[in-house]
Image (cartoon, rainbow, N blue to C red):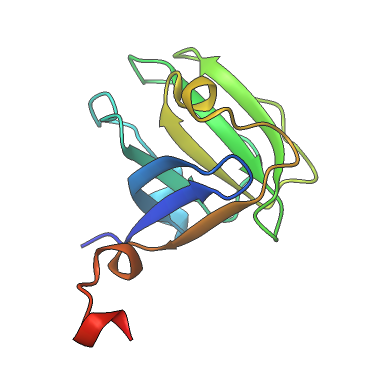
Length: 131
C-alpha cells in the first residue's frame, strides 16, 4: 500500500493535500499519475527526488509545486496541460503534482515553507487529553 502524506503550507496556513502519495522508487516515479483518473481535490503525488515531469498520456491538467531539500517552494507551475514536458528546475529536489487550481486556492508561491509529513500524525486520536 502506498504511503500517504499531508502537505501543509506553513507560510499561508493552508493545506495543499491530505492524501498525497509518495513516489520514491524508480518505478513509482516513472509511472507517476499515468493511468490514474483526475486527482481528487485533496490528493496528489510527491515525487522524491525529481525536478521536472512530463504529462504525456495524461488526460487532465495538474498543478506542480517544486521544493528544495528543506521543503521550501522554489517554483510553481499552474495548469500544466496534458502532453507537456516541464523544464528541469535545478534548485528543486522534489515536486508535488496536485489537482489544477490547488496553487491558486492555497495561495502557494516561491519562498513558502511547506510541511510534508505522515498522515497518521494528523489523524491520530488524542489520548489522555492529547498529552
